[in-house]
Image (cartoon, rainbow, N blue to C red; front, side, top):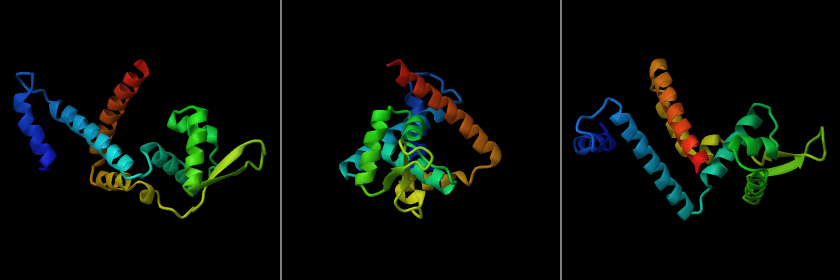
Length: 166
């Protein structure tokens, strides 16, 4: 059992609810995950590393490129759920960082296509945490993976719903 699991178990006796529910461990694990993500973001920002948005963009661009799919700024904006202006700034930052370049679309020279500078760059080099999580997921049975996915999809819907209500 990990330190996080032990801490969660110890906290369950001091909860506002007199009797713990079966889902308490799962909801507390999600709370801890959200805190860990916030800490990771602060550490990355303090050290000048790529932001999560930049990492997500690079993962998207690299994965599409390896699948033979071209990426436009509008496709990137749609994937990241940001405005086209935000996507343009993101593309500029990634270009300045030497990670991508833009080139005219061969079918419509008015449009730009985004290509990675290094097509051999491993996605896990851009975001090692994602690679480590992928590795952990390999230990799940198909049934466990399905349950975790369903639960996290529901958590994501709650978080997305909250952000759209603000």
